[in-house]
Length: 324
Image 1 (cartoon, rainbow, N blue to C red):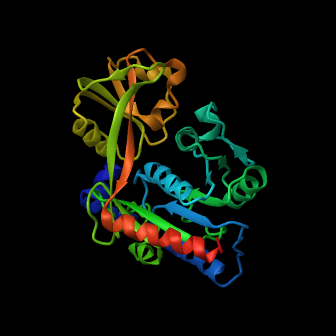
Image 2: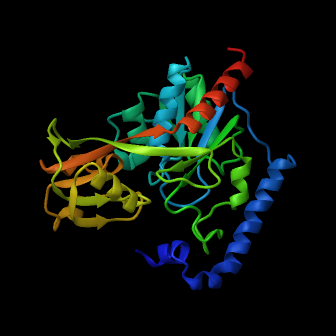
Image 3: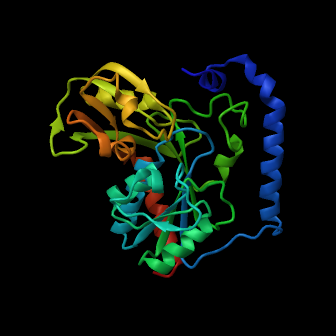
């Protein structure tokens, strides 16, 4: 575990040294919210409903599998969803429609995975408003899902859904850099839905679990049955992925954890023996140089009954509010 993780999640007292910076961060973000609330900064309302899926903490909370589930629910209700995302890690200056065969370094790993798995149009741009306008002008999408856009206040939204990692919660409850939070715990009360990933969380409306699917070969059709593997992950919470791998029946011989959104190169695997097992998000960055014994383990989100009821109610209300 890194020093930052010990600081944020293991009660390391050194976070006190960073509190002045956290207070400054909090003051700046509070001022920004106030400017939007008072109308000094203008929100942009696009001509379609907008659902924001985000979090208030740094690190993986399961937004990608939840977004996939949400898009499937919207399609079942008759919507044609489209997704907008920042395209983290890619050099993007204007809206770009993500093709399923795109290169991850050019569009971002999560948007590429969303485009491949959802079948929905995905547009990437750091400016979410520009991305939303481009999506509506160039695709048949009639509802927008904004991936990780909770703090992008310029894009007006109809629904806010916040995900929380149930196993880590909100850490020490402090704002960056003293803690993992982009916004304080108070922000959860403003959301329409709070989803706990993998474990219960007191402030959540219900829980989502991640069910592993078959482990698929990166560059082929073979599937990997449970065995001993070398685990590779460049995600926000690799420990949760390891728990999923073990739950799927695999045992872990080696662990090779990289920073979230790590841009993999072949040299990263020089000392890693196969079979290699990684997340789907990492796999989209590794196919160009993958070995025959490299596999990815996908996950599908499942909601508990309480959460299913609430999200159905929210989406039904949204549909009626738009007169359809």
